[in-house]
Length: 248
Image (cartoon, rainbow, N blue to C red; front, side, top):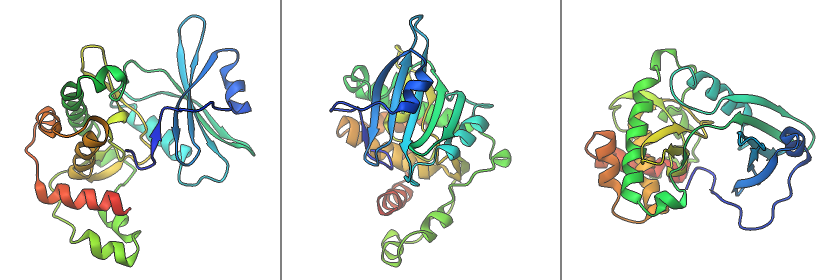
């Protein structure tokens, strides 16, 4: 589960006019829908080239494609992420068009059948992301103090005391399993959906990425994830950042 619940569409999808224009004759296939009405489409040319377009209905402030485009442009200097080709908005909605990137989602049926392989690759990919992105040059924050300050008074009381920082990194911000791509050998290749990327304690990502394994694969795969990252679980920080995720 990401911050916004999302899944492959199970019902027919009406393709927005803007998406058809961006496709320019390419095949259009809906591949992802979230609970706020945002859609992702795969555009495939006759020659086999792929592009992806995210489309968000007008008046959906929770889904900020401008923020994602900024973060993709910055992160792409250091780590594999989709390259932005076009973005914009009209009266119907906003869009973000990106180039295809090698790999398939860690929740593709191939990897649902091999969850420990996927979990280990998610951990390794997250470690590579944290090691590659330079904290000092990052203009974005996902800081815990800001996140806690946006909670209601009741939620602030429930989340508890903020633990000391272990290691500041540039966090993914939505590190749930679907947002890591894997190659056919089970190695991570890239990350997607970076609209919340920013500097924070690495446990903000680690707690949620490991949390998402149960939602996507079932119980028992956290050891493979932490092995892939190369760290032992920290129960206190995991509990805090999972509460913050749920309450936020």
